[in-house]
Length: 380
Image (cartoon, rainbow, N blue to C red; front, top):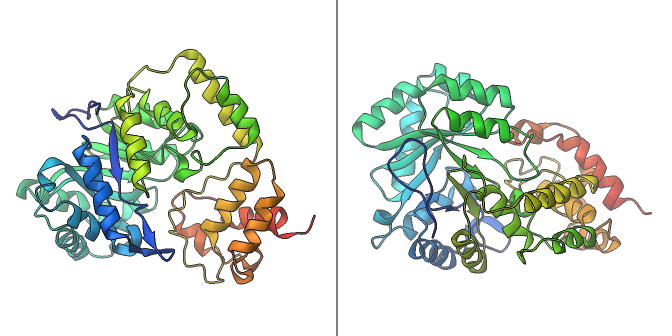
């Protein structure tokens, strides 16, 4: 395993962090984690050098922290730095900070959180928790040793990111970043901004919620074949992130033991400046090609669910992406109608806007669903 710099700390994180957001599930239910498999995956990663495990209060309908806590029994807790996140959108009073934090400690079967994040800060959520005194609360927990270091995760515009970075002496931050998102949310400018101010930067969604890992259309395959590396698309995405010195580590949400094995091996090959100028130009060409094909930025986080009208939003977008990324393959339209019930189709959207209020990516979901109707539901 390769290890990197973590901001100002005298501690080196593994290049690969284990993100416990997409653990293997049963019966298609995100709240029913395949616990034996998930625990085996987390422990395999740790046994192979991963020393950073990340979860959050809402992941897997509240079950992720419980399973992570079980995985870190038997001496594994001492081998890693544990990160999780305060569900800021649920906080309405000062007492809520302790309420959720204590619940998390119990779920995770630990007496402290090494790296604690304020989850999903942005221009609306940040003033709310700040005015409630979250920083005073966090400083107390730091003094008590209940929290090792304080940071935040972010889903909003660059200006809001800079404001939050400058508002406190944070140890670290977590941003969405991949070769499709260089100018989205914090983006490359935000990455550099935080790093210059001494923050460690943890990257989430390095393969865009799996979108950059699927079997690509022929046009993309042809581009990848021009490269001198025989990497899978997922590894190209990971290596692109690892290539940058400002990145402290990246998180991968792995749902199969194969993903863990492959990502551990990829991390062992990683390093700052490993990609040549030709490699970087190739990635830029792939990104441009994906944009031409209509790449949708949904990461499959499921915060938008359940839809009041029954639309299976993440699944619709997954197939919508696949449709464009496979050069509008009619077989994907058939798959859409086979895998989704008519009551789950995009056409059932009533434009209530609830999903857009909840989406951490701030996607124009209603507009995108109308596009999915035209692409996947109408007869050509």
